[in-house]
Image (tube, rainbow, N blue to C red):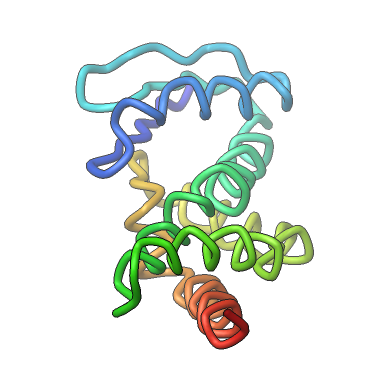
Length: 143
């Protein structure tokens, strides 16, 4: 039975409840706190379900945090940032990316027993972050 660890530096407190919710949606219930992250014991054939749960976590649950980080980098007032973020959230829908992202996560998990969602986003899914950055730019130019 493979054991995988999902850890986060940026989202330590948020990771456990978000991952538990996404995992349970896909029938995965063996998550435990590993101190440095969440451990999950998988039965045969459960790796694709975990890849899908992690993809949803990155594309839907971490998106507001990442967009907030991108908006915070803008050289505008706080008042403008408060207007830009909701618009960027609306413009940055990621549902259409779930299949290719899930395939990339599955490929990664087949050869690794550890994953860091924000690191995976920033280094392996740069095209997703680039799309979110474009959404922030469009929202900022429309203010």
